[in-house]
Amino acid sequence: MSRREPPAARPGQPVVFPPVTRIRLANRLAIWFVERRQLPFVTVSLVVPAGSAIDPIDLPGVASLTADMLDEGAGGRSAIEIQEAFGRLGTTLNTEAGSDAVLLSLSVLPRHAHEACARVADLVMRPTLAVEDFERVRTLRLNRLRQLRDSPSSLADQAFVQAIFGAYPYGHQPWGLTQAIERMRIEDVAHMHEAAYQPSSCTMIVVGSLEPGDVARIAESAFGTWKTGSDPIPSRKMGSDTIPSASRVILVDRPGAAQTELRIGHVAVPRRTPDYHALVLLNTILGGQFVSRINLNLREQKGYTYGAHTAFDFRRLAGAFVLQTSVQTDATADAVRESVNEIAAIRGERPPTTQEIDFGRATLTRGYARHFETTGQVGRALAQLAMYDLPDDTFDRFVPGVRAVHADELTTAAERHLHPGELVVVAVGDRVKLESGLALLGLGDPVVTTVAI
Image (tube, rainbow, N blue to C red; front, side, top):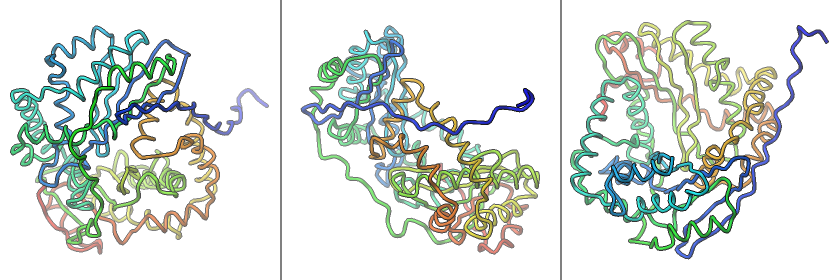
């Protein structure tokens, strides 16, 4: 072989996820531990199923505001003292509040793991929840929401989830809505904390250079006195009226806008769908990579946008299938038409080709092992297992699962889970220039609306 010819690429190697040691404390707190000795490092995470999906209908945003309050004072320490304590341990606490869970995580040297876990325990077990801290955090949240009103992408995201999910879980962004945050009180946060932060529903994840016995002692010392409080918040479910039927085309007016922010999609499936591998591969071909059909069409062939992509937003309950892009104002209607046609065509008129399938498989599998290189990455992988109630061999099965998907299975998955007749189109842009063109798409008359943020 000539040196000018690149070597043939090897197929992606299956991932062998490390074994998980499970411990459960007397208070029912689950401890998951993966031992990794390559580096003297430990990542600790706590998964709390207190995401925005459990927000009361009249208080969207209270779950994430509660998460923001945890490090504003806890265990007799002020916010500054808490940060100084973590700083002395050489670490920073990260708090992420999503739709399905709150994730607290940090990485430390093994000798500091005990104290780091004790500090995390203070936050979730003994937050101060002072009124003056709450007022400051709420003011910061309100200011952030005011900024988001000027963001076309934020307006489009909010309008889209409101349109397809309505008042059910996932019908608002985790940060909530201004009107709800304004009327929120510290008592609402205290109630959310008492009901949602309970040991029996949480999972502590430890990855790194420790012994199982050390992990058990650290967990018991830090969290052993955590007691179950009031009755937990009941899980909310999707209803039969989840998808509002008022209109399939929603127009948010931004006079003078040079571009249109687009969201096109519908309610799809949860993470535990048996069609997961087929849908991941299908989405890679349709809109999940640079050489996907939709990006090549809208960007490379038509020149409407700098980029367009699609995704199945897999969550604990049914998430969304969504196409996201920003296009030239005068190309909005054509971009929507092309997008809808591409989604419809992959269901059978133009099914995935052998070349597309092979390239999609390579994209998904050849670099898959890189997702598990660090203790933090392994910790986040375990957090997914906890959040979505997935089996231990989930990551072991990914590469073989993607490889095993046949062309007919992709078409079947597309027919089952992509529904052109149910697509909702959200366009944020100049109404004067957009309304007539959108009305000619055959998707119904556009409904002009404002978006509450």
